Amino acid sequence: MSEVLNDKLKRRLQTPEAMAPVPRARHIQVLSWVLTLSVTGYVVLFADFGQEKHCFSPVSDWRARLNGVY
Image 1: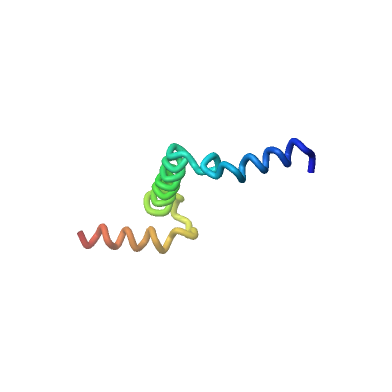
Image 2 (image 1 turned 45 degrees about the vertical axis):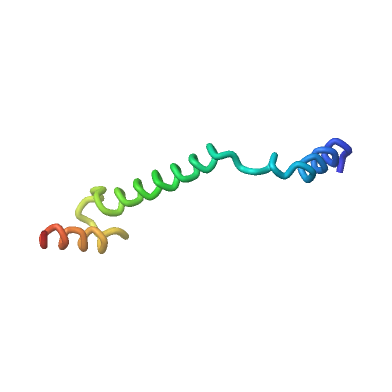
């Protein structure tokens, strides 16, 4: 390794609080999970893929049966 990289590594090891994630990064991570799960739920339950069978057909059929019960 070069001398610059060695110095950089030593500084990071000596100040571990500099490596700690900032709260904003955690908020972005949680937001990305919420958005991903929301979009996935919408696509699986509500998106219209036409009349042909597809990988989400069983879930869509189950949701349609539940809507008929209520």
